[in-house]
Length: 247
Image 1 (cartoon, helix red, strand yellow):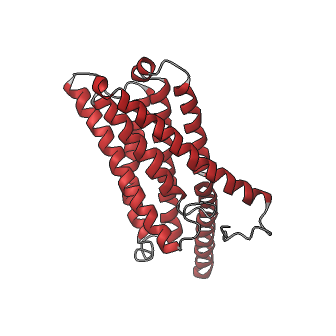
Image 2 (cartoon, helix red, strand yellow):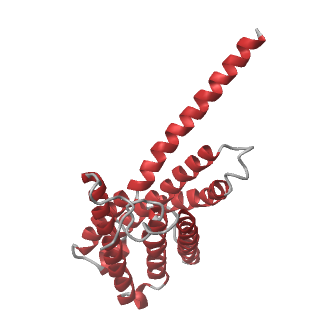
């Protein structure tokens, strides 16, 4: 029987719910991704680049980025036995590969549309994808500052760099996943090749994946936000005391 870092006897009801939800989330990710890849392979000859765009971005966002976000989550069934250093490595490897796949998948679709003289970023699917791509590029920079927060602490406080990175990363992931939902429900490609209800079921599953994946990250974000507020309050008090001393 697996031994969690949370003692099963002392674990609260919510702790146990988090473990169950996290395990269910891994199952949802696997099932929906398998279905989409199978679906894309069935129609690859008819849709070509569009199909390639769909499965590459799905694996990038829904599998690699999602698992990368959950790497630090204490209730994550895949990394709870790993050390903090190992979790950090998992996070970076998964995010770099996932982000690269997401960017590549978007770029090949942009090039293909340009080749066919089609309008860019018209649908909600495309707009959310564009926002996610822009946030992803900024997240890479903020991620470097978070990774080397100790080295750059003279210029930016670690809690501030980690808070900004977490905020941008969640925005990147959520907007990218919303784009996937609109890809299932709002594009002609999905309506044409999957006229049944499976695409709507997959969209609901993706919605649950967004929520379940971000539980741990949102908890960290709240603690980081409190740390940022305390940082600015301390700084403000210090400046007020210095002004009083000068007077």
